[in-house]
Image (tube, rainbow, N blue to C red; front, side, top):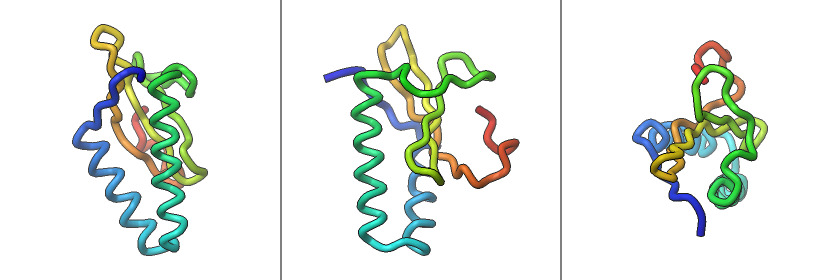
Length: 100
């Protein structure tokens, strides 16, 4: 197993927004591949939580690219041995909107 992963409400909302956008612009196969990639990414996080880029602004927070268009912001909670998924961000947005 590995470290427990917890989805915050914002992570659930932003994941839903990314899927909704993909449904408008991508095929079902591409959406399936994206969700499979997210699952692979989360499995990697459980065993190697420090693998992805550390945020320069927020302590214990990391950012990892899932696909070219979408990244995941997550926080490692060392005391509780958990990873909190904070948000799925659109990499094409203005970086000032992403406060990580």
